[in-house]
Image 1 (cartoon, rainbow, N blue to C red):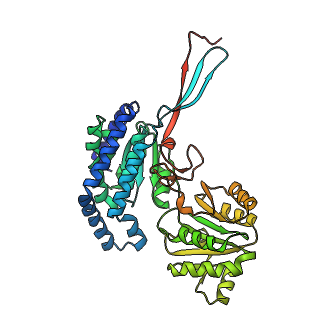
Image 2 (cartoon, rainbow, N blue to C red):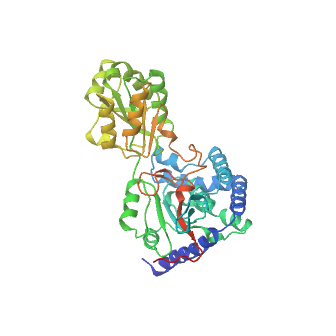
Image 3 (cartoon, rainbow, N blue to C red):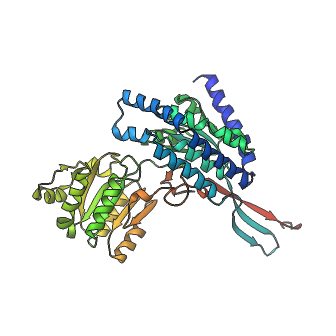
Length: 424
């Protein structure tokens, strides 16, 4: 690795740390002013953003990316409008910094308050999605954190165009421009440096494929918040309403197949499989989904002349990110719970049932970041949860789990007030 590149990344981290100390005590009004300015700049820069994205899409085509991979890269006027709305929503959300978590007075008169504070400097390593640059920048900004952004080469032009708008917004509000910085290279050596700058960087959040996340966790000395993949299940219970089961399963699978919260696995209770599975299968096939079946589900579909293929063992734990779904027949809700806890990635899993007792059992027993009853796994999303946006969906169990919004980007500290108490 060149000394110049290491020096560049180190300097970025040093400036970010200095900016984080200013941002940590910045008034809410200043942070909101920067966000509203950024929303305006994004809206007025639509043509330039789309032109930058077109260059990335042309490279994607030349490099033979799949349709699902290209969809992740694609920026559209609608998505820009949604991004502008997301920025405005984050500006409208309560500021978590300074929120009182506990306030107690000890018998000796010491007052001890626990208050929410920023983490400090957060590095975000991400791959394809064009919205991530803005989502990460605005959430870190509102929660008082400086951010260092390192996007993938496949979306470099779009990321650079978005990042160019942010310093203007920060300066407009009297905040340090170094509070949000994009590493201006996709050289892996820059990432190697960033992952070890624990003197300046307090948290790394990787957003991308499993290989990226395993590289980050294997090489970082900075703490990492992560999710490896989204192997998400829908379980159709014996008491499932057929129409609801069809609607939710189709939405969970096909609303956006490239999303980490899209359903990849379908479990069907044996008591209703003969009646329910053909209907669900036809609805999925109508949406171009191919089905990979276990012996029980394959036999049912074969009798109805419904197209399918035999699943392999690997299919039952696969994140397809494509129009493919693995199907299994199970004997009970307990079998479904055990199967999900063994084979899922603890991301987003759903039960469809009209039986509340069974639903409550499933909700309590499935050990995932988000568990759904009679609704789509696609709702495991910061925007849908009312967070304005998300910096990622954590499947970790320490500090944060599920969509990471403003509060999840904060730590806390204790403020202790006395009047001369001494420890004996």
